[in-house]
View 1 (cartoon, rainbow, N blue to C red):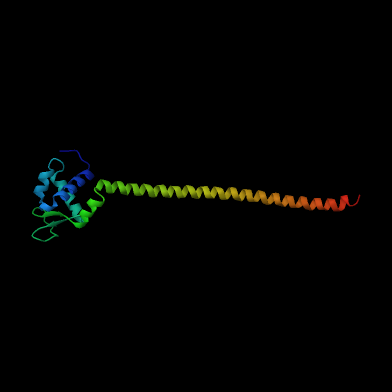
View 2 (cartoon, rainbow, N blue to C red):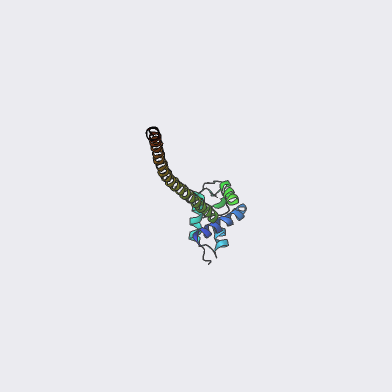
Length: 157
C-alpha cells in the first residue's frame, strides 16, 4: 500500500469518483480499484466527508440521499464536478487557502509597518514644526530689537 497523506487519499478517491461516476460505482468497486492506495475504512470516511460536503451523493433505487453505504452508488454531484474542474483537488484548495491567509497576513503586516512609519513621520514633523516655530519667534524678537536699536541708538547720534 502506498504511503499517502490524508489529503492525498481524499484526492485519490475524489479523482477516481470523478473519472468513474458514470459507471455508477458501488463501494466494492471503489475499494477494488483503490485497494493498493487507500484502506476500506478510510474510503468510507472519505466518502462520508465528500457526501457531507455535498460533492458526491449516494443513490439507492433512485433515492439520491441514501444513507446505506454497502449497496449505494456513489456519484459526483454538480458541486463536486464544479469543484474538481475549478479547484482540482483538496491539496490545491488547501494551498489556495494558505496562500490567501499568507497574503492577508502580509497585507496586515504592510499596513502595520505603514502605520508605524506614519507615526514616526508625525513625530518628526511635529519636532521640526516646533523648531521652526522657535526660530520664527527668535527672528521676530531680533527684528523688533533691530528696529528698536535703529530707532533709539542710531537716531540719537
